[in-house]
Length: 81
Image 1 (cartoon, rainbow, N blue to C red):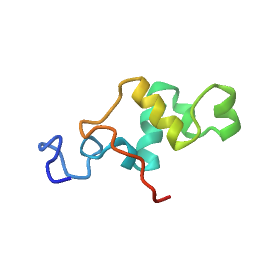
Image 2 (image 1 turned 30 degrees about the vertical axis):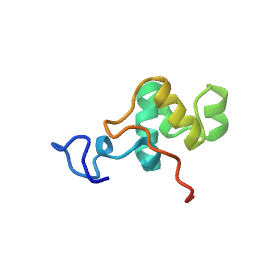
Image 3 (image 1 turned 60 degrees about the vertical axis):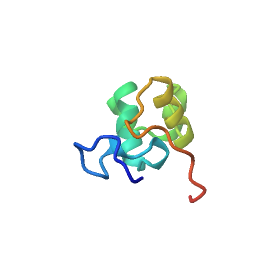
Image 4 (image 1 turned 45 degrees about the vertical axis):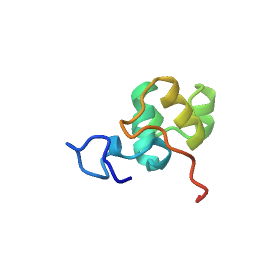
């Protein structure tokens, strides 16, 4: 990205990184703000039982649904796993 979405923030700040390029930690912290702090410690089967997202795709979908999108936008899914 040549232009920062938020030039007042560092280049690798979450607001300057498209959602699909966020680290797992950034995703989980943001999802926890929309679910519960226990999201960070719950096992996958516990998350499923509460209707919380488990996969990266599900976490991204929740953030998009809640309109919690960084200034850099959503971006496109990476082919690198």
